[in-house]
Image (cartoon, rainbow, N blue to C red; front, side, top):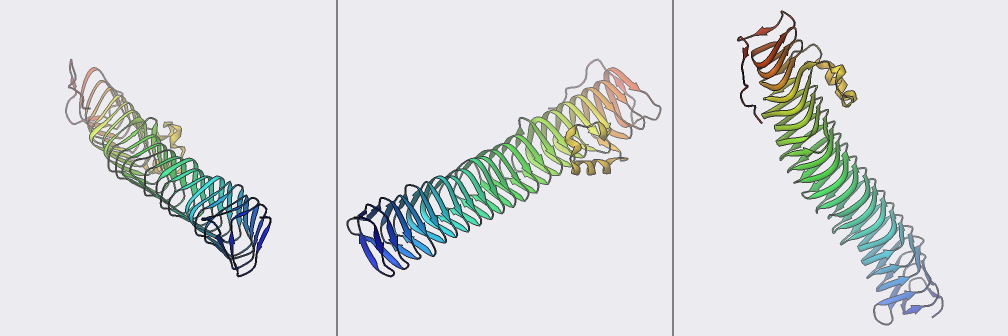
Length: 414
């Protein structure tokens, strides 16, 4: 059958067309034999039309209105629809461009799905890139390279291998693997998600465990399980119900609470941080840290005016360090503001254990247990117990009880 034209408002029974199909507004297409109509070249629709069967063609375009397909739509090349496409089956094409709404049972696209308004998929969505101005809702799993959505996204899990950028809300109801996920509003993920990088300037909610190489929170983050990451950066508020571990650093410029233990390479606090226990290689504090069981690190530097609640155990522990010599991590503006507010306040710590413990000016702590202890001007301690040397460079040092030089220190906690 050569080129076929279907007149406005009529119903045509078709089989195979070795040419192009032209369909005027308000027409209806059915299959003459079986449930499939095949078009070797382009299928062109002038406006609203109903296809009451499966349709396969080389390319497809709709000038205006809505195209309804009661079955599968398979297009070898591209789909270009000015307004809306609604299909009960699977829409498959090399590229899909829809100006308004795309509603389908499933979508499979080799390269790009671009929709100006709304996408709703009942089962699965597979595409290289999906670019939607409004909302995306996929009840099943997705398999995507890139995701760009201006408004809201809801998926049933799956994989996002490249970058996801969402202007409003992102929610996955099933486990999701992702490369990079950037959400400017709210992000909600279930337990068992794994990714390369996640960042949000709004609210991040994890309903269980999370494994992510890089986490950055500009607003509020709640993790209801355990979290493992390469590095974490908090400019807002973080709450972790379980334990938190990093292979790199945790930079805390806001307020963080870990109900379990925190372990990692480095801990940088320019705000408030609370955990049951802290085990790191290096800790720098220009704010407040509170632990129930203590904080242990090879090196602990506590800035002037900071407060440490809970035992401190380190190789070298330095209290009341000038904020100006803390690391570059403290160059963040929020960290600078908090650090400047601490200037002039007394530095406070509880029991301190270490090879070398240095108390700078205006420092108050309880008991000190160390090989070498140095007490700065204006420092106060309950008692000093040491094995090697006690340095008191100024007279303005106050000990509640006399210092005690011993052969062996008591066992350190942690």
